[in-house]
Image 1 (spheres, rainbow, N blue to C red):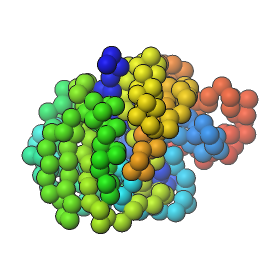
Image 2 (tube, rainbow, N blue to C red; image 1 turned 180 degrees about the vertical axis):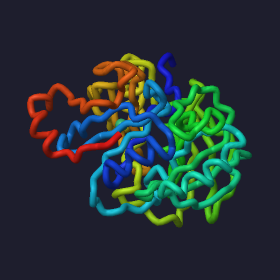
Image 3 (tube, rainbow, N blue to C red; image 1 turned 45 degrees about the vertical axis):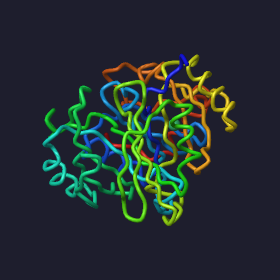
Image 4 (cartoon, helix red, strand yellow; image 1 turned 135 degrees about the vertical axis):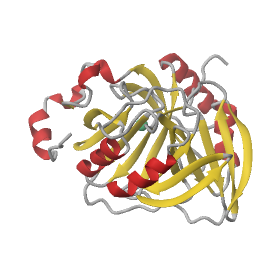
Length: 314
Ligand code: ZN
């Protein structure tokens, strides 16, 4: 095989009000706001992106904010925890900081030998900060030093009633390998790691047949995207998914990357996204996120779209 999945690209979530989402991810968690655009399929709503300085794949959290959208519930068939990497020794800082910004702490625990704090963001999305050795250069926001700053994603946890059909994609198509297992409640967690790439390479499968099914809504993950270098690699992954019997979309231009999507047997929507062209394709690196960027197909309706969207204070 010549095309490789190199870890995560981004995680896209459904959130509540846009301003609250922006404040939490840029100020409380200290990610850089790298793109203000609209949902390409529904340009009356925002699509907001957060990451490191450049929005490097593996650091990118994105949200579809819908003020007043009913709250979802996290359960089987969803990404249940989105995990960020933070430096060793920084959890005390975060445990003190997060509740001051509207987060609710759920647990301080150790999983696969890694200390982590699990919490809900202000709209109920479950996140974990995991202490890890991670060489990535962090974006530094006000009040957060390099000794504490988020490095990007560590990985995701997938909640499943049945592991094998979804795990087959991870191992046989994406080249992840199993690294360990540990019991969790009435089920277990199985850790997989990307066979290629060096960051955001973890996928934990939380297997529990008795877990309630999740329901989409505010505070849930819409989809998780894995990264490939370019469109050639993406096409090879698309062919491998098809050959394994899965439905996959055509390659779709998302302006900042190319995307393919496949609904996995366990119900979770997987995307495979390219590292190219990146977020500086339509504005300079220095001023990422400063202006509302619209895809070509919606540019003619800019005045109408801007009138619909609530202004954001960065
Ligand atoms: Zn996506």
